[in-house]
Image (cartoon, rainbow, N blue to C red):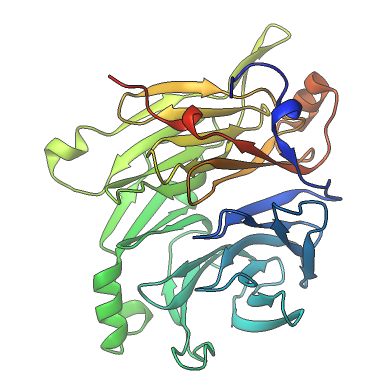
Length: 353
């Protein structure tokens, strides 16, 4: 598929949304299933084979993040302004409380290794809620990790938990050590992060994602920048980290900088996509330090990105109320809130050397 022409000609467009999109989550094995969450208080389950009829289930308060439950095509976890994490069951159309926070839940992730839901909140905590392996019931006593700042973004892999916070703080936990501490009955203050870092980005972080090879992570900021970082503290590895500018445009003679709101790794090729307040999506090769391509502009600022498990599709959520909306929607003449799915097999493959 060429990267020329209008996005509308090639993308599968899901039915429009009434309010801004907050997050996307492809099913970990079934690339036809996509979750989305919205400020309209609903979690949506889209079957891309029948995209016109998504299923939806509402919660109290706008939803800020959603994640798939283990081994299920109808069960998810969601959190948001209701200050709770809940399961969302599209079979029974019911929800169940997983854990409560003292402020909005910004991030929800599932960890297979811990068999637990990990949630990050503006109440300056991460909460780890193990589920009983036989009953799937949540532990009544989640592990509470106190943090120095509000949580803005959270990423979980097989071996790491990376939390991007206010104050440019990035804390990293090693999952085997975390699992051992939990099994020993340790509680919040007794569980230390593996690393405490300061972001190399000077402005507030918007997104963090871990590389598919588990060797590092990428963060984005509100000031049109992306940083590529590595876990190994060895000086020769740390020397490889770098940051770059993106999502900047000259608008009416003024150099305009947009927040980088969307971030997703292609699980097959190891490349990553960024989406910005300028309504554009770019694909980057982190090893070659090059942009592979930029897709045609979307109708409004990009709010979330997600690759399917097979790496062949990229879901792009855009929302007219997101940052940069006044200038970008005018440029495209459309606006609105939507999710478009792009087939992108070879577009995200690194160029042969």
